[in-house]
Every structure is written in structure tokens, then in C-alpha cells.
Amino acid sequence: MLLQRFISALGILAITVIGVLAGSWVLTLLLTLIGWGALRELHRALAAYDLAPFRSLASVLLLALMLIIWQVPDTALLLLGLSLTVMLPMIVSFREDTVHAIQRATATTMCTLYLALPLGAALALRATSEGAIAPWIYRIAGWIGDATSAPGLAWLTWAIAVTWLTDVGAYIGGSILGGPKLAPRLSPGKTWAGAVSGTVCGSLTGWIVATVTALPLAWPMAFASSMVLSVIGQLGDLAESLLKRALGVKDMGTILPGHGGILDRIDALLFTFPVALAIAWWATGR
Image: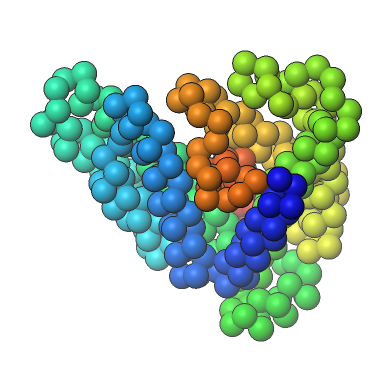
């Protein structure tokens, strides 16, 4: 099991590095495929309770929102896309009976926004070009083809590093220290010791990455921001645990041996990406 988890983690890391480095359409395509995969898992889990979202419509809406955020970052167009994500599922559900209609329409809107907005935030974070950072990041971005994208490369790396090292720290700390359960009703395996270990690990990781890349954060703010991101990520993990408990499943999928499904791997990131974007925009004065 540990070997499977390790091999899967290497594959996930390799794909992530390629997407983060490349940015632009490569990252957009990768995140859209991830969103579609997670949407498929949600559709399958909700279908068992006759609450399946309108999958084709949700897929189209997901793609539309990702393209708007990537290619046409216009507030009016984004608001139109968000409005359609609410309106179209209700229109499509006219053919259903009244109660079932609102349930499926709500599931479609919720699943689409749950995935599209955080993944879109990752795209916006990678596209950040304001602020000065370490020269070596500019060189890496220049080798890839666009030196102006260096700040976004640093910010997205910071967000992912904090989130994933929080998960690693929580897993190791919880396994070694054990102790009282964090939220036994939602996730019996999580402990307070693991949560604290994860927060410490994520905070230190974020501070190191922010220092090495020279993000425009003074060291106390870099540490505090990383701590906030670490805690938010763990809340995202618990939120998905709540969803799985409600649907009666252990994992949302099996595509990633040792990790479960796609949603099991990105649950924390879905919460940290928007917060990281807000921190980046605040730090750069946007």
C-alpha cells in the first residue's frame, strides 16, 4: 500500500510540475481534465442517491468557466458564466418532477462551482505578473518562454507546497503521535496531533518557499499566511470527508492507487487556491 502510494505520488508530482511550469493553455487543459475527472466521481457517487447532476451540462459549464478565467478575465463575462451555472441547470430540470428537479439542479450548480472556481483561481494565481521576486525564478520562466509569468509561478508553487506538505506532516504526525481524534464523525483517522503537525509542517514549508522565491511577504507575514493556508487546506480535507460520509463512500474513486480518486487528492487545494489568490493579490496591491 505504501509503495503504491509512493509511486502514485511521484506520478502526481511529475504531472503537477509540468503543468505549473508550463502555465497558459497546458495548465488550463490539465486543470480542466482534473475537473472533469472529479466531476465524474461526484456524478457516480450522487447517482447512487438519485441526485446525479446533469453531467453533460456541468462539463460544458466547467469548461466555459475555465476558458473565461484563462483567456478573457473580464468581470462581466465571469458573472454571466456564474449566472448561467445557476440558471441553465434549473431550465434543464423543467422536465423533472418538482422536488427531483430542484435537487438535480442544485447538485449540478454545486458540483460545477465546487470545482470550477477553485481550479480557475489556480489559473488566475499562475497568471499573476505583479510584484518582484527572486531573479532565478525569472530565469526559469524565461527558459519556459514567458519571464513575465515568474511571479505567478512562485505563488502557485507556494500554494501547492504548503497544501501538500501540510498533508504529509499531518499523515506522519498523526501516525506517530496518535492521540485524540480531530473530527471522529467525519474522518476517524485524523487526530489533533496530526492537525498540529500538518500546520507546523505547512507553515514552515510556506515560509521557506516564500523566502527562497522572495515573494513580496515579510517573514512574519509569510509564516502567518502559510499557517492560514495550511489550516484552510485541512478544512477542505474535512469538507470532502463530510461529503463522503454523507454519500457512504470511503474514497471518491480508485484512479490513483494509494490515494483514492482525483477529488481525494485535490480536496484541500480546492480550498487553498482561492485563499492563496487573495493573499497574492493583497501582497501585490491588486
